[in-house]
Length: 144
Length: 436
Image (cartoon, rainbow over all chains, first blue to last red):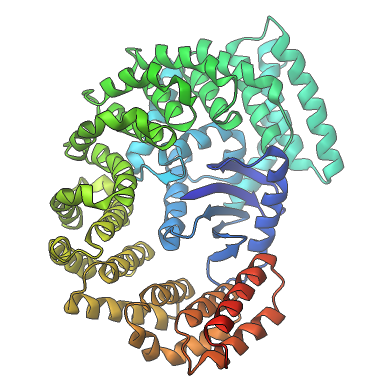
C-alpha cells in the first residue's frame, strides 16, 4: 500500500503532503526533510527507488519539485512510478500545464484530485476523465 | 515547469485585489503563500505561522466570518499543519464548514476533516449527521463527497447508522455513486469486518457490474478477502480471468488507457488476485494459463507501465502451478530486465530474480556475471537488492564468499535499518553453515 505522498521542492519545502497512515504532526517535518535529503543525494543515472527505514520510496522529479511516494514492501515500484506521472498528467490537464505555484495557490483542489485517485493507500481511479469529473462539476456549481 | 514559475512569480503583485473587506481575506491566503515562498529561515517560518495562527483564531471566533471566508481559513490551516504547526482550534470549524457551506465550501470542509482528524477523534461524531444528510441529498455531488469522506475517516461505532444508506447506494443508477459506495464498504470492512459480513452477495453484484469502474472498486475488497481465505473464492477464478482477457484485449473505453495501455493498474490488480487463487492449485492455475500467455505477449511495448505489468505477470507465473512454456517466457523476460541498460528495469530484474530463485535456482546461475557486477554497482539501491538476492542463493559452496561481500558492504554502510537487517542475515547464515 501507499503510506504517503509528498511534493517537496529542492529547498526542502513541502508543497503537498498526504498521509495514508497516521504520522504525528510533530514528526512529519523531520520525515519530509529526511526523505527529500535521501532523494537529493541520488544521481541522475541511479534508479528511482530508495530503501528507507523498513519501507521504500519511489521518487520522480519534475523541474524543481520532487514527488515522493512511500510504499510498503509488496507494492510494484514501477507501477507507482508511473502512477506519479499519471497524477502529473491529470494536474497538467486541469491546470493547463501545471506549475509549482498552481499547486500552492490551489492546494485544496490538488488534494481533491488526489482523493479521487488514491483512497486508504490504494489506487482507486486512474482514468483521467473520471478523476477530474467531480472537481469540474464542483467548479461549475461554484461559478453559478 | 520552471519558466511558468518565473512568469507567475513576477505577476504576483498584480494578483492582489482591491482592499474591500471580503477581498482582504482572499488576500490573506495569497499573502500567506507569498510569505511562505520568501521564507529564508526556520525562525522566520515560526514567526510567520504564529502570526497567521493568531489572526485565524480571531477570525474563526468572529460572528461576521462567512462560509466563503471560512473556506480560505481552512486552506490556511491546512498550510500551517502541512508545515508542522498545530491548528486544532480550526477542526470544529472544518466540520461546521462541511455542514453549512455551499457545495465547494462543503467539499473543502470535508477535505479539511479528512486531513486533520483521524479514526478515533472525538469530533468525528459531529460529522455523522452531516454525512447522513448529504448521503440522502438529491444533489449527486454532495452524495459523492459524503461517500468519499466516509471511505477516508469515519468513527467505527457509527457504522450502523450509515450502513443502510451506503448499501442502498450500491444500486444507484449513476456509476460514480455505486463505485464510491463500494469503496466506503471496503473501508468498513477494513475497520469493522463483522459489520459487513452480511453483504458479500452485494460485492458479487459489484464485481459483475456493467461499469468497469464499479467492477474495479470491488477488486479491493476481493483482494483482501482472497488473501484471507483463497479457497472460498476459487469459484470466481473464471470471472477474473474473463475480466483480464477483456481488459488486455482492449475492450474497455479508450479513456481507460494510459499511454495506449489498457487500464494497467487494473491489470496488475487482477494478476495479483489470480496469483493468490492459483497458488498450489493445479486445476485453478490451468484456467489462467491462456490469459497469462496473452498478457506476456501483449506487454511488448517499450513503456515503463508495460514493464510494470510484465513484472507482475512474471511473479504470478512463478507463484501458481508451473507451466513450462510460461516459465520459459517469464525467465526470458527476467533476463531482459536484468541485462537492461535502464537502471529501473535492472532493479526490477534483480527483484524478480530474488522472488523466483526459490522456484528456479538455475536462473540466478545463468545471470551470475551480471549479479556479480551489480554487487559493485555505484547505486546503493541496486547493491542492496543484489545482496538480498545473494542471501537467497547461498549454499554450502558459496557461503564464505557471500558473507564476505555482505561484511564489506556493512563496513561502508551508514544506514541503521540496513545494518540491522544485514547483520540479522549474516547471523542467519552463520547459524545455517556453522563450519564455514
